[in-house]
Length: 170
Image (tube, rainbow, N blue to C red; front, side):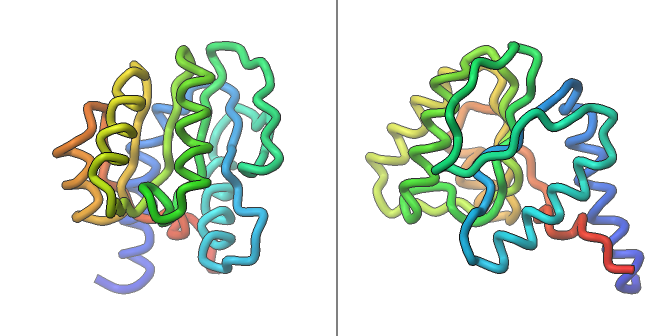
């Protein structure tokens, strides 16, 4: 399989899994308003992916700029993917948990993440908070993260490629 075919295959996997789940207007939060080029490329992939939707983006925000607006329960909350799920980058995880608790009736989709925990107590606390949300979908971007999520988290867990694969390259 050549490069073009592989990229198309990875994009299709993302689109087949996520497009049906984003069934109304949405917000994209935890955007990387910082200088990590990898996170910015993932964000670009998310933006290009979302352009395929017939729904509109109501808000973009980072963990620092999100003001927790009142949202209709139909609004889907999308959280930026990357490599900060767990206890290594605690400010991003704390933001995710705050969103999950503040919007218990909205569908929340965490775009593909790498998962890492050093502290098992913290992981159990996160598991408990996330289990209380009935419509939370967590996407892992690698097999090890997927296995951790499937083993410990009660939510819907998907294994999907990194959103950066949605960037147009031609």
